[in-house]
Image (cartoon, rainbow, N blue to C red; front, side, top):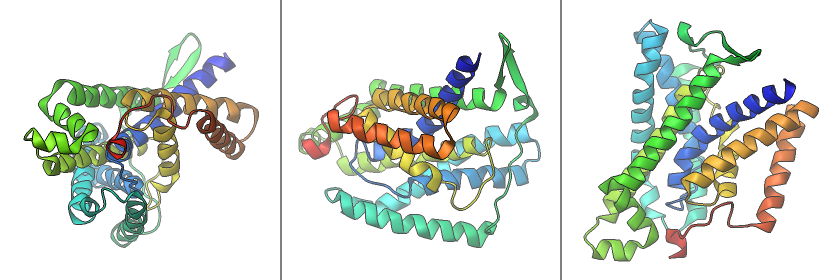
Amino acid sequence: MDILSQLFAGLSLGSVLLLAALGLALTFGQMGVINMAHGEFMMAGAYTAFVVQGVVPSAGVSLLVALPLGFLVGGLLGLLLEGALIHRMYHRPLDTLLVTWGVALVLQQVARDVFGAPNVDVSAPGWLSGAVEIGGLALPRTRLFILALALTCVVALTLVLRATPLGRRIRAVVQNRDLAEASGISSRTTDRITFFLGSGLAGIAGVALTLLGSVGPTLGTGYIVDAFLVVVAGGIGQIKGTVVAAMALGMMQAFFEYSTTASVAKVLVFVAVVAFLQVRPQGLVSVRTRSLA
């Protein structure tokens, strides 16, 4: 039973990592932008849930309203960042790291000025309280909801990339920008939409994180490094690599925590990822990206 509990804990942690990393799979993995403000877009989504709950008292309704609004808020912040700064630096990834890190600090200070430094809480809906008993194993409903939400986001993003004209345009620009433009595709518009989608997914992740704990200005900093680890270990630019890496890292973290502590487990996971990248620097799944075109 302990093993089953740890397996579920690993899946649950993996689903959180997946939500945090899915947007980065677009903005970093496919566009080559090192967006250190991705965590702050998650923080913005979390505060969106807090604001919505202040307007809509029903926790169940407010969560359902906050999810699309969190996507919209995160996406618009990403669109603003891309239009104001990032589009000038698509071939200078280290510059994007420094600029977006500065933007992340600014967003944290804005959150402190607007909502205050102390953390705030968002109430979970009644239908997510308690646990589901399966074979004597208690599975928290909030964790199951986040797992289902992560899978839904993966399916939706995969369908967009594989089965829509927009997805075909995104893949064409990622693989060969010049050829895509020669074919009549506006790479500038495609960049904006891609960044909007990736940042919007960060907003959804932020809303989901309100079910696990308090919301504060530094909420995103606790997830940004793990999210980058997932994208790099999974293979830059591949959604399926991101899914596998998120679940693998979640499992490793859960089982390491079982025999050590949370801090030691995080260090062991980091060391394992670094060792893995020494053997396979392209990650689990390799793909041809714009930077390699």
